[in-house]
Length: 225
Image 1 (cartoon, rainbow, N blue to C red):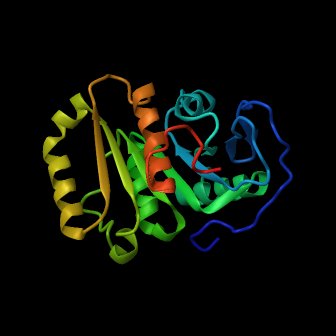
Image 2: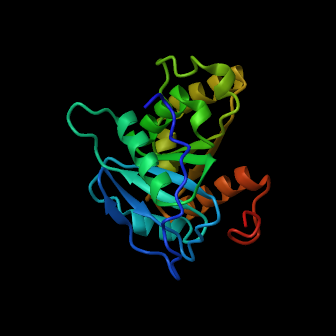
């Protein structure tokens, strides 16, 4: 695959009266939203998580049960890098559900959040935005090599207050880099101890819907339908 997801569409998925548990498919897990409508092109959340305790269904229940299709790539197999796993998971989601090709958002947790930044900066035209929850931006790695395209890529960084205090110097460098490059980075800092708290995931939902609709929606899905 040449660096971007397939544009194919499929209408095979049936309407679901409620959100289904994530379905295990080869290479990924797939989540369909409550009241899934095959004729509507959904935003897609691609979740990267390195820990075995990550529960896609629970995370989506706290993010939104209605707004998104979501997919979680499995850990890459030997000889397969993270990029390949991401593209394969996106292709599976596009084949199994109705996905808006310009509304694919990459979301990573902790070290996978840093990897999400790397993948999105290498392929900025493929994503509608990128979110890191508890992961640093990869400084000193020439991440802005495709600066013209990256300037149009919205990014969100979510940090716990304790982590942000400990990494204040690195965060300052990150903000200075984005300011100098004219790139878009929103930052949220949370007082709680959990990086996948309801407050964090509610902000993820609002931020994505704001990017899609142009303003934060008063009701879930209302402006996207």
